[in-house]
Image 1 (cartoon, rainbow, N blue to C red):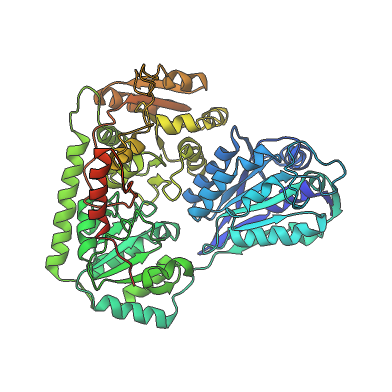
Image 2 (tube, rainbow, N blue to C red):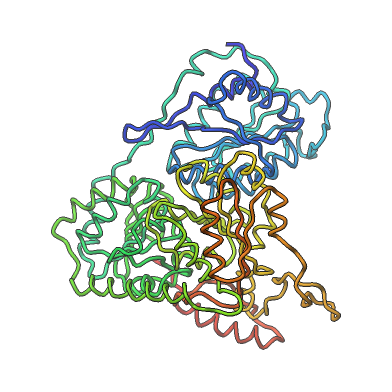
Length: 621
């Protein structure tokens, strides 16, 4: 079949599917693209031709920011449990390099996204072309090489003949839950438009089976022996539980064995918040209940977690001197962490196997009862945080409470950066495995609106609440326009803190006195400590096509949220919040180094506190 390389890429991707448990999914459900001289005549022409022929085969959406397009693809992939994703195409130069942050986010979070940036001329007949890097070390280097370290698979297609192997290699990584992340195929602009006789079988429907890898019997037996020896076991549920659709298996194991469950950011929603064995968030942004059980646990069973520093409270959370780990993970790299007994397997398959192998094992009734008591006590703390009655502005915890009350059981909250993710982790009451979508692997400012767009595209039957602070909104809000254009309904809760609230708190904790974190005029002393800037983000959102509601109190916020639910299209609910009111403490620690010497008393005090925290840090050997 004689096609251009661009046409071949579009046709091939339209024929790719995934399958797990007998259920098929389209692998590439659509495209985002911003066109320039690097891709307009190749992929741009091919997408136009496909749209005119069969609009449903490869739906195209117009992006406003290349980073935002990748964030939307990542949000889509996460919502679809990594069985489907979106493709993103850009021109060479700034368009391509704008995708680096999004690619890093996808790879860090183990989310499949497909990036197809344009590239320099393969023939080199006109170099240097517009936006070419010109690296003196070699003419085969382009700005797209910045995508190599943040991609799980990277290839540059210098000749049309290379395309089939590159496409098949890319699909393998996109559909492998142990290896997945950003996949980049760099396409030189002349090659995109070049015609070639591709073999017809390349374009036949191809179904990529996503297996449920079973645990190796020896590893399973060793893990079971460790768990059976435990008197105070604790399960840490990570994102792998959700992606594997293993929440039912997790609940069955927890109930049968009487093992309490704590959750990472990606794993939040693995258990309903009101289950008697659900301790909630663990680690630096965790609940008092979960962190108390983490300190006392003699066996910790990590399921689908990569053990980030927030989850382990910078390796201070699990304090029992003889604590042992059992790590269930589809990726051997993660399963081997903390010298744990590695069970390399699909989360659901492993949990089902553990349930059978642990038959007859059950923790002491007093242990289970204490878990329920601590969980209920924390929920009472959440209730108080939801209704502080702070004046004159609501606390952030009250804003979260109002949104949580407005959200239905299957609705989704989306967030990524600032102080909000930590507060959501410990305070949001999850009722559905897909109801909590906080990007905290990369914690990327600007992800929220773009990621929320991807979530809504993946789950149009769910209401999506995007919670974003003014700092993240200013980083990237352009995809509001895409949502307006596509008539996608989003409810964006824009929390105005007049600065970087999270970094302000962190700055204060290390003695740096919130330096450089407030949005203020420069005062007469030359410092940024003057009056608040006259920035009106609500008016900005309205100018981008959103319907805007303003709220100054919690009651007004609740009324605005009710109106937003009844309004079609994109709504932005703007609310001022008090950045100085902290959420309830987690009784945990996070390792952020403090200046060892300083003339400032605040820094010296913070350093002494830092040394106290370091004393609880340890290697799990």
